[in-house]
Image (cartoon, rainbow, N blue to C red):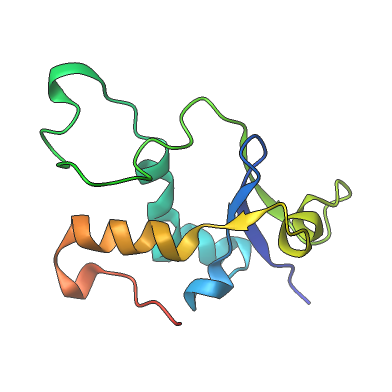
Length: 117
């Protein structure tokens, strides 16, 4: 059986679980599906005059993970981070929130990720 993966911010105790977005969670699936679009959105660093020129305002998650320790971790990894993130009430899956913002930014319906709720 292939292992599943999540994208984890170790510093903020946040993660993106592809399964909660109705996307494949195997490593190769994350590499080719729209879940990988979360990384440039969360890791965008742009300050000063140009900060909102290309993306606009009203995005709470743009750049949220800049400077943080971010990993893609599998469920069988010896660190236990995968299960800790998914089971602990201290950790939060921010995937749906991020993709609502990302979809609003993208604007083109055919390119947006379809969310399950």
